[in-house]
Image (cartoon, rainbow over all chains, first blue to last red):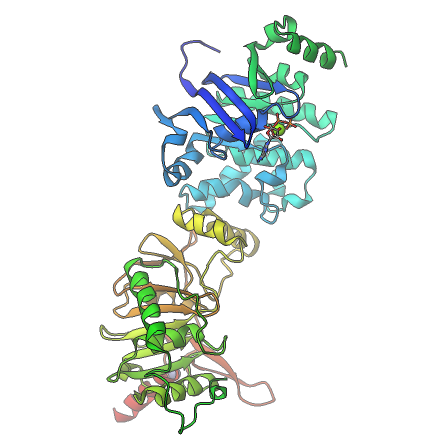
Length: 259
Length: 289
Ligand SMILES: Nc1ncnc2c1ncn2[C@@H]1O[C@H](COP(=O)(O)OP(=O)(O)OP(=O)(O)O)[C@@H](O)[C@H]1O
Ligand SMILES: [Mg+2]
Ligand SMILES: [Zn+2]
């Protein structure tokens, strides 16, 4: 992480409530190209809600989300829905915990990878095929499976396919919500290696929501700790994990990292 | 069906063209909007229209709303004027309007059709009305109406292209033979109704106004004259129409849509024009020559 690199994402004073429940409160942070920000916190602390506000899915009640689109800084919630829908694919992509939420299960692996390109106007079948084959190799799926349905893939393969589909348009910002959740440990480790390589290869800015401090340690440069909708501690990952300042973070680190 | 409506000679208290004036106005408003936004599906009528559903009520409602005393109506079903459906719709309109009907494409001012666009080039003063069972081209791909509307609003049609991609990956070509999706005026993705893809090129820059009426779905969309209409495809797999090795056994045409007909129970077959008016015209002409 170099301090002079381009700022990709800026969140200012973001608030989001569901009725009387404040899911996100006064959240501000920024993210630079090539930087991975981990968000940790207990269940219900507002991690997924925050991610959905960044991904264009939930409108925040207050505050702003600014994303740089090829050098232009655009305020995500200050444009009309049509423009947002138009720009979102070039701004960011979201990797869901459950690959079924991010894939079309009745469409072949190649079709899944190609769809975002077709949506942005690519009309050459041959080049779609070769991009899809490249991406299958890149996420370590046998290219021979290009015409198979994701239904016939294992959970780990489905997740890798979702990653390929998410990155094929080369978004500069990637949002991940528990990308390794629900997978068994050896599959998780392989997937983490893959994510780490892709983040470096494409110099991605990424926000990674996770329960798992081990995952956070492996992938993220900085860490943000959330509790009851607020960010209570933030800093370089190693610093937060080795020298937590807040009592809640100390509890989190001691209870989880021991295991 | 239409004969079940109980219109008898004594009962003459229905309006011109059967529908009441209010209903016709409502349909006309939808048509005007559809013409103004080419390819966009305009919802119409929360009110029941007093016609039995199915059998092309969408087309009948459109025809009834625009037909006038000076019109000459042609009705086609699968290319032919003499099928039960075509005959009964034609008879219905004759009955409720008193206007004249015709089987000749060139003589008609309004053509109501199911499954075919006439082979003969349509002219400026003609209106083609297509019966449309399902106006939403993405219906089989997404079942949420709201989602479909959003995709139209944002012109996000990658999903439809995925369907073509899947066909090419599986069969080596796009296996859609009827109701092949089109992009109208470079904007809305539209269903051309279940015409063979052979007829798709006729939609492009047609001189006639084309109106699509979907009765059950209560939607109308339109392609105004001279509108650009493109069938979806890939640069390296360009859109193609069906072709036949044979010529029409009756008129010898080598560029019309052919039906395969069984001649006897020994399995002998013949290929003849599906458009009977076109085929007849050609035969009359060649006899004259
Ligand atoms: N659509 C919604 N409607 C109402 N309440 C919601 C909604 N989504 C989230 N919440 C509530 O907001 C709070 C934060 O939820 P959120 O899903 O953001 O937590 P999280 O940190 O992602 O939890 P987990 O680790 O379990 O995924 C919770 O109390 C949750 O019940
Ligand atoms: Mg969550
Ligand atoms: Zn013929």
